[in-house]
Length: 385
Image: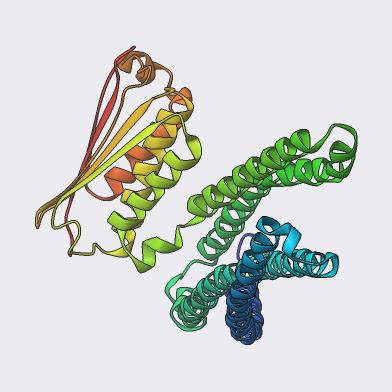
């Protein structure tokens, strides 16, 4: 057999591996959902008990408050008329007032602990509920993908008459997967993994800092740790957005862009983000491939403005009409020379990729940039509802 010619067995093998991987992921996500559901039910029971205890402590505390108030009144009376009471009566009045005050303070501390635990449980329940809902949505989506891989995509083997074309097709899939895995692996290693390793190392020093440097230094270290964890969370969310934001499928382009820009502003801190939508942007959904493409275009433009232009303000506007979708991304960054960009294409790979993506949508992209005065990118693609 010609070594350059292969039959459909290789493509079927690739598909089977993909199906096996996706099916395994579906099982893992389902298990996470079930585990979260079990934990959710356990926390609901604990929360019910905690709420009952809070009510009991409040009721007991109210009674103690009344008793303590009477005891203090009695002690005040004894203090004012010291000569009218015996030494035993004075001692009894003082000891009772003191005892009730200690008991009341203890009860109040217990109430605060129970309230804190109640609030913590409610926050955890909200998080678990979100995990459960997302896992259910992901399992449904993966089932659709499995159905596509198992049925529709298998027809590719029939449609591809040339075995070499099938081989190239499979190799491209593998290369794309490996490149994406390497990119994600590198970003996780350089970002969240390094940050969390630093958190672990610094957390081990907390006890020594409290002991050797005092409480204030200890709390400063805790605040620094909290900021490090916050940064790691931002990096994880950014990587998820780079892969594919889940909100895009559920909510659509406009809410996802709004949330993305809000997240960038919240965690970046130095750049002010502005977002506006016009026309039918809020009411109508575009086909998924259009929403993904437009989101990626906005994301690439914002990333360029943050990383290369050091912009302090970025504005994103979306207008959806029955005929066109207009996307404008404008920043007040350092800008660049358009003629120089055309001469050095290798240094403007991001913009070249954006241009190619716009052309796939049969749209146009215009770039206006002046050194020191920022950049404006206008993208216009035909609407397809």
